[in-house]
Image 1: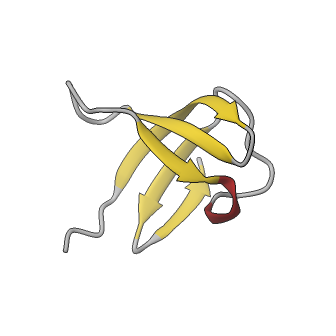
Image 2: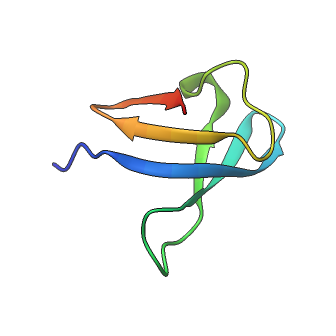
Length: 58
Protein backbone atom coordinates (compact mmCIF):
# COMPACT_ATOMS: atom_id res chain seq x y z
CA UNK A 1 0.00 0.00 0.00
CA UNK A 2 1.44 3.36 -1.08
CA UNK A 3 0.82 6.04 1.56
CA UNK A 4 1.93 9.06 -0.43
CA UNK A 5 2.60 11.90 -0.25
CA UNK A 6 0.23 13.11 -2.98
CA UNK A 7 -0.99 16.63 -3.67
CA UNK A 8 -4.56 17.52 -4.63
CA UNK A 9 -6.72 20.54 -5.31
CA UNK A 10 -10.40 20.57 -4.34
CA UNK A 11 -12.12 20.87 -7.74
CA UNK A 12 -15.66 21.07 -6.39
CA UNK A 13 -17.79 20.26 -3.39
CA UNK A 14 -20.91 18.15 -3.90
CA UNK A 15 -22.86 17.91 -0.65
CA UNK A 16 -21.08 15.52 1.70
CA UNK A 17 -18.31 14.81 -0.84
CA UNK A 18 -15.43 16.71 -2.40
CA UNK A 19 -13.98 16.02 -5.82
CA UNK A 20 -10.18 16.16 -5.73
CA UNK A 21 -7.79 16.53 -8.67
CA UNK A 22 -4.25 15.31 -8.25
CA UNK A 23 -1.74 18.05 -9.03
CA UNK A 24 1.51 16.10 -8.79
CA UNK A 25 0.73 13.58 -11.56
CA UNK A 26 -0.42 13.98 -15.13
CA UNK A 27 -3.49 12.12 -16.40
CA UNK A 28 -4.73 11.32 -12.90
CA UNK A 29 -8.46 10.72 -12.51
CA UNK A 30 -10.64 12.79 -10.23
CA UNK A 31 -11.14 11.33 -6.77
CA UNK A 32 -14.40 11.51 -4.80
CA UNK A 33 -13.71 11.78 -1.05
CA UNK A 34 -16.15 12.07 1.87
CA UNK A 35 -15.83 15.52 3.46
CA UNK A 36 -15.68 13.87 6.88
CA UNK A 37 -12.17 12.65 5.93
CA UNK A 38 -10.98 16.14 4.96
CA UNK A 39 -10.13 19.23 7.03
CA UNK A 40 -13.32 21.17 7.87
CA UNK A 41 -11.91 24.42 6.43
CA UNK A 42 -11.75 23.27 2.79
CA UNK A 43 -13.29 25.22 -0.08
CA UNK A 44 -13.09 24.87 -3.84
CA UNK A 45 -9.49 25.55 -4.83
CA UNK A 46 -7.98 24.45 -1.50
CA UNK A 47 -4.67 22.60 -1.89
CA UNK A 48 -4.27 19.39 0.09
CA UNK A 49 -1.52 16.89 0.82
CA UNK A 50 -2.40 13.24 1.44
CA UNK A 51 0.13 11.26 3.42
CA UNK A 52 -0.13 8.30 5.81
CA UNK A 53 -3.93 8.06 5.39
CA UNK A 54 -4.55 11.73 6.32
CA UNK A 55 -5.27 14.95 4.42
CA UNK A 56 -3.84 18.32 5.43
CA UNK A 57 -4.14 21.81 3.93
CA UNK A 58 -0.95 23.15 2.35
